[in-house]
Length: 205
Ligand SMILES: [Zn+2]
Image (tube, rainbow, N blue to C red; front, top):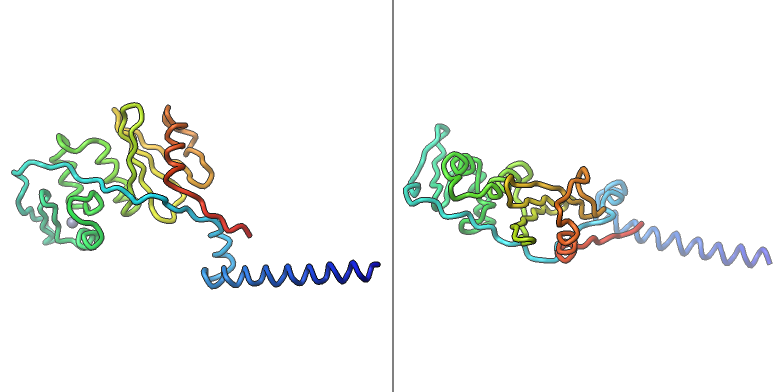
């Protein structure tokens, strides 16, 4: 009796260990170490293609080359800049996509274009220059324009609400919670919309 039980469980345990080790091997192949694998147990996947946020058109008077002291030159209208930041972004983004804006253009728009740029545009530019290029999604709730900014691999979604003054919230996609518990009045509706855009793929250990 005991022998039988021991044998059965022994085989079960061995099978279990083999399955586990296959699983870990797969993870190790994907990541560099088990520590890495443990850190990457879950990942967030965007279900929708990001939207293009296009820069507002600025006065024709700005359709010319401006030079800055470090030999960089830019045209804020087209837009164009000779700096590496712009040229690198240009490889990835076409036209007047907000993600092409480098620090030089950003400063120019802040100083000269607040009549056509909304505070939300500036909030998005701040995000880009603080955290890197973003994928944007837009929503409209209660007549308010809402931007969600997402960066691959980041569990936090930045939410910018176009209102006076512009509001900035953080929403954690993994834990479905708001940063500092600060959330917009229409958070339920927004969370429902967000859930149609992102999913969490878990590989439970
Ligand atoms: Zn530049």
